[in-house]
Amino acid sequence: MVERYVMSIDQGTMSTRCILFDHQGRLASVAQREHRQHYTKPGWVEHDPAEIWANLRRVVPRALRDADAGPEQIAAIGIANQRETTVVWDRRTGHPVGNAIIWQDTRTDALVQELRRRTGDDFFLDRCGLSPATYFSAPRIRWLFDHVEGLHERAERGEVLFGTMESWLIWNLTGGPSGGLHITDATNASRTMLMNIRTLTWDDELLSYFGVPRAMLPDIRPSAEGYGVARAVLPGVRIGAALGDQQAALFGQTCFAPGEAKCTYGTGSFLLLNTGTSLVRSRHGLLTTVGYKVGDEPPVYALEGPIAVTGSLVQWFRDRLGLIHSAPEIETLARSVEDNGGCYIVPAFSGLFAPHWRSDARGVIVGLTSYITKGHLARAVLEATGWQTREVVDAMNADSPEPLKALKVDGGMTANNLLMQFLADVLDVPVVRPMVSETVSLGAAYAAGLAVGYWPDLEGLRRNWHRAGQWMPTMDPGRRQAEYRELAAGRWSCRSAGSDEGAQG
Image 1 (cartoon, rainbow, N blue to C red):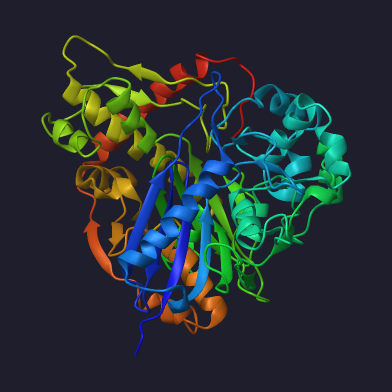
Image 2: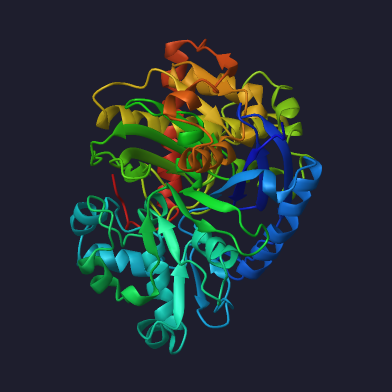
């Protein structure tokens, strides 16, 4: 019998990957290609959408070749993508009007502060579940209208299209200018500040507020549903799912029950808690988002705490400071000392995300003395991820009726055992890593396979989940609280580095 696979396309912040998964959820092959990061001005971060589409056309055939598989063996394609990243392109030619503005970009800071002064948070929270922040797509669309001559008029005439990365890829896969599907899913749409969080439709008041013409917007579809078939790269293969990368990880970790949570540790880190079909509005600086929507079933919601800088802090330590040659070396260097020597890092390179939402904050290192070595700095880099996670978990516990009992983790940083133990220590709960750490890709594959009947139901997916590692808390509670207080002092230094405006939560 010929083996059949589900293909996952993970279009991430640093690279585009194509992975084939078999029926047991095992990885059969992987192909990956990085794309360039464009830092054109301070706070500006961009990607070239044409480069990303070209990379996709390269990695798909390589993944097939490495698995010795043909297109006829692919049951479905699922797409996971970096969220909030904003692409605008010409409907007729398929050419982007410029580079994509990615989720880390802070150029809309002044616009966001004006929104909050003029309207306040409640107007937006009531409609889309989000407070104004540079993180989301709508302010970027407005910024483009204000800075690209004639773009708004072209959008009103339906000549240009907006989408996040999954919309751009699906449009190109299904024909591009020759009838490509212009769609998004509810998870990605929930990150734009334009979708009504209850009805899962574009909200007229929000569209009017930001001045976004409906003609440029994609149709909102469920996360797992047969969208159509590819006409490019894999002609005839069904496209069955699209999810924002963090919702895909929630799905891949099989967090299908209310109260189950996962955190993905990559460039940034993102903690999501399943709240079931109940829409929970956070009172402590978290986001209300769509977790996933399968076909005609009701949407499943989640509380989310995004952290802007975690893995990228290790990259900074490697590339900007030159203190290590490769990312894995940081664990060895950090283990060369017993503790951080009183040194703490608050890495607010893109401001502070949850639960503080301070786009004006700037990173700080506190506790520097002549005693501090590069080993202490390495440990402080890793511990910064742990403490930021602790702040999000504290907010989540305050919003949720049940405190977090365990945290499922995934992503590249989970290979660092020192960090995983530190997480368990500062959270005071078990930290659990699955056999398949690439749960973003796996979640997109699961959703696509579910849509086409490759997997029968959610319980079947649960049976594929297997634990690879677990870390139990061992830190003395007194030490935990003392160090948390030291971090709080560093965080206030970080805030004072910016203006006094923009606080939330």
